[in-house]
Image 1 (cartoon, rainbow, N blue to C red):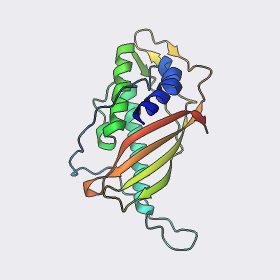
Image 2: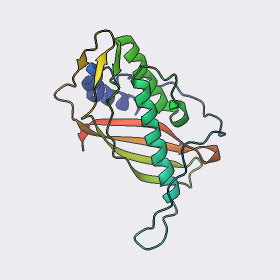
Image 3: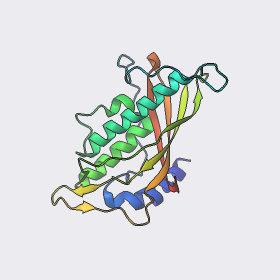
Length: 200
């Protein structure tokens, strides 16, 4: 399974976004230990929404926290990619294990290739929680996202040259993320999988 994921990432996103200097780490991600549970993941979630039956969704609060953590991870990831370094960011507060390893491989490639994202660039997102298992030994959640590259730009640090995306790269593609709820009720993104071959 690992080799399949790596190969897909190589052929779809590595091949497509390597020119932009991003998402090109295709080896095994180094695992990070789970951080202490003393720090909170994000701000207070919104009140649980009512379901169509008129009763409250018992998972609503956790779904809200999951989306907050997912969005916060991307905010910190954007900060890191703008300088090809996670220093000064809180990326490890929201991402760990395979997800963090993937981002660190991207950052390493960016440093070696001398590229960063431009300060004004960003990825568009439309995340949705598609599954929650609160009864598992380690509760998990799945997020489905539509990633929008419309405003994405990278440049070479030395020359300032903007690097365009390849014409065959879909400007909107699907991605999924797996989150786990650790001690203290804190959700963490532990796996992120881009599906660059699936437009949205």
